[in-house]
Image (cartoon, rainbow, N blue to C red):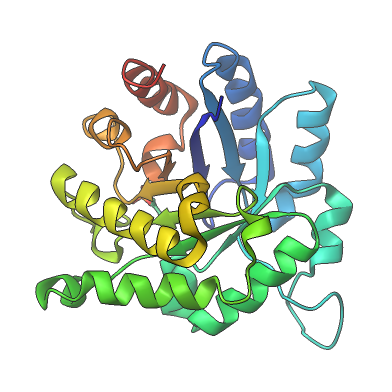
Length: 257
Ligand code: PEP
């Protein structure tokens, strides 16, 4: 049975020591929740050591990188290539997070190139899309999201279904200043995204995991998790402490069996 996805991106937070302590604590907790597939996405500098720690315990916890260059090597100072991440044994590559788009000018076209490279190297691209507050105010969220999704998936074949994940993260809901999205809104948008995937891939578009993220917390997680087209939750701040993350697992575990 397909497991419900639960994971967290640490952004530029936690030292390696803090990250290792966190992953030790998390590994001890997740065995209680067989219905979930867990992932963590730490900063690049932590990946080798964290992979070693997970492997030492044969943990099912998946490890992701927060970004990746699409080329295998080259004159791209400051970038990290697929070969480097493959050598570590990273599972997931997060692409197109709104902070990458906002502060590092990442475009839909760049996300598409990176997604294709990630698939070629056997990673799970976790492609993030999300509309701005202004898009929502003008009533054009579906158009904006369809554009992001369609460009990100250009040339991604139906044979890759199951290998890539999509995270819908409304920009206005993300981070400290974010406003949690109303559940009916999340339902409407996830149903819409599902239809875009079905239009693109036929009935097998049903099998693309659609995660929701943006101010997910203990109070709203189970409401989102109940929705038909929500296949996982992608959590920031509220999962950065293992005990807070565990409280969310327990709440979601009550509705996802
Ligand atoms: C995010 O930035 O992807 C995110 C989900 O953050 P938060 O949960 O802190 O809003």
